[in-house]
Length: 244
Ligand SMILES: NC(=O)c1ccc[n+]([C@@H]2O[C@H](COP(=O)([O-])OP(=O)(O)OC[C@H]3O[C@@H](n4cnc5c(N)ncnc54)[C@H](OP(=O)(O)O)[C@@H]3O)[C@@H](O)[C@H]2O)c1
View (cartoon, protein in one colour):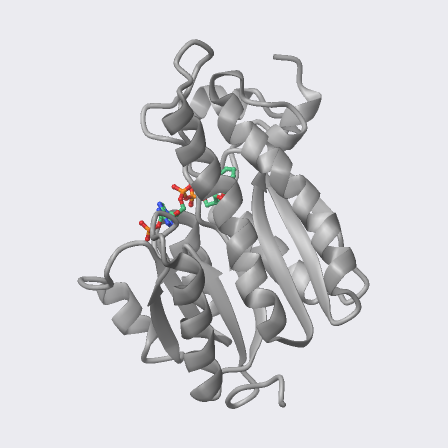
């Protein structure tokens, strides 16, 4: 099976490749990749994807963490991609949520929902993708600088990302040497609604929040670094070295 799909363009899957950082990464990668983009919602009204389709082969899938048939849905979609000649050589798992959930507000339902999307879903996506990767592929997972210093008002989210910090080296061992696995522990890039970007920037060594280009550059670096696996790259402007 060949790794390269068409005109030397690699085929990558972006799980959560529709909004925010996922869209920014899709727009960057489409310059020289064919892309499978997943979203939890039906795909319509996304003219930017139609534009990208002029320069890249784009396939849109619906993968919803809340779908009880998610695992069989993912398997069926991967079968279809394979049958259609897509040979996957990279994937980035971006899907998640960033719920504020202070101590005292925790409920079984709330915790399960946070962990289903931010922990269980990436595990299931990685499991669905793993057997489909071509030799030399790189699976990348979005984490958070909270793996170093948890967000105190978002401990359930931080715990989910800490779980992904175990997935990265574990999966790297299970999938080596065929597939490499890399995590990205990001500081604030696109602040949550209502948060103070200037305040967040002030709490970094570099006195700025990140930009989507910072993630795109690191994703390309990881994909192009064949001696790199099981590692989590932190990009947080030095946030974790600044006192509260
Ligand atoms: N933004 C930042 O500054 C920042 C900082 C640190 C870490 N990160 C991490 O980077 C990743 C991307 O962050 P982001 O801020 O761009 O996006 P985000 O708001 O955290 O969410 C990413 C995507 O998850 C998808 N999603 C939501 N519910 C879903 C469900 N039930 N099933 C499947 N997918 C679902 C949504 O896409 P659809 O609606 O299309 O499904 C959403 O666009 C996340 O993992 C985040 O934790 C981000």
